[in-house]
Image (cartoon, rainbow, N blue to C red):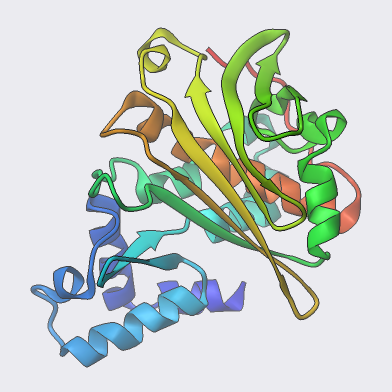
Length: 258
């Protein structure tokens, strides 16, 4: 976590994160605008933020877009804040959500929300938990359960107390590296009318572990779903990391999902 604190220590880097909070998915040209340093200087600061995994980048056409990755901030919350504020554990994701809350929607062709996580386990071990419905409540937001028909075209459904919260279809299934499914929110009337979006899980082997990249995109615009999901993914990914690495779930109190 030293890299995270080092990255946040500089005002220019905090200003760049503020820019991405206001409008996610910006190019270098957009981010360097009005900054009191050269283009090369901005690139160096962005490199520090990327190495700390506070931002991730994606090539869309000929452009390189920069996105916030709030997962490291969730790890800070999990490590220190929860110990002293256990009664408020349900709101710990606000630390990461505060970074990207209110983020504007970029072009429909680009990724919407991109998260990176590094786990001390082989891709096969991560995949085994990710695709085991019996383990879903040990890491998913709201301790959701799931039922899945594990084949392309099969249904995937997440529940809270027997009520469907998310319904979807398996679009791609390539063990143990890639899982893509559609995502239709059902937890409240304001999201129920949104079109299906897309969730892509990518697992890449790295020395000593796995790089997990989750991309949630294809929302079809600035929807209630696109704004709501930023609160749940950082928690879920942090809990998944804990479960994979320790074999012990990071349990949250059961909360009402709406």
